[in-house]
Image 1 (cartoon, rainbow, N blue to C red):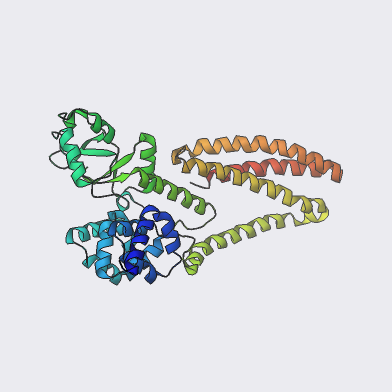
Image 2 (tube, one colour):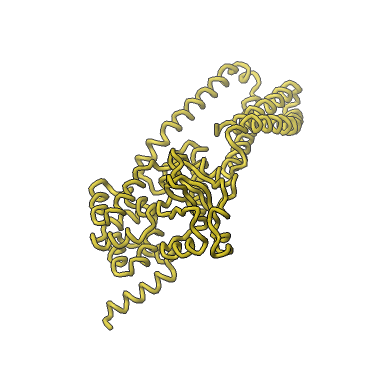
Length: 392
């Protein structure tokens, strides 16, 4: 056995057993070097490593693959993963790669890439077998083995291809071999339309407690299925995007996004913040004469501003967590705002009493202590409600 052949077998065995760790090490190499490594591996092993690479790096590696290797690797990937990688290439590279694939797979990937980012169709697996109701449990299991489908539920369609029901894989395995699917199927399987946004499909999955979600068209015909892993990933992406929008960062920005993209998305928010800061300064300017006579107010203004800022941040953090965990919906905005109003008022009074007492001891002025106390209560109420309503 040649030394090159031995190294190839060693790399194959290592990456087969530790694909995630291997992907981390490969990301440190140049894309051309990574493509050379993947081309020497078995297609299934190489595909498993390729899908674990960072999105932009996976696209760079795919662009460096030879046409035969690209055809093998993209064919071994799940369709939605292959589509996500190809979508990052420029038009010429994408078409070049698609031309090397089998016509059926090429059409499938074209259809997936036609869906906008952030909708159910863009993350569904279109390779889902639809069964007729008269099929028996034995026949369904046999077809699943031949199809090599990794599913948690199977879906039953009628003569028009419309979704009629579903059967969990566990129930299918425990059923008598001669039992027909229509006798054990659930008549109201969880479904979502292909153009439904991610927040809608994750809300359905959370409400129904499903392990997979059927994707249908406007005529209720079965198009594909979204697995539990994809549902979880979509929820995590939405939650992290919500955290970015809290501070005025675009949902599309990533840690390794282009600097100019970050500037274009962040600068408008920074300018708005600057405008609100000038607005706040102008309000203080209205009372310039009063502050000049009572210099203690100038010293105490940051205390009020700091407490109200903390109150708003607390309300916003709790509200965003509720949205991320699907505990609340947009329709709950009034209840959330009312809760934060009460909490802000109670906390404001408690903090104001302590603040006013401290100001009274420091300034020996009942008037200044009263002004600061009332300001503290009002500002914390407004900040709490504003923080709760920021996500609407």
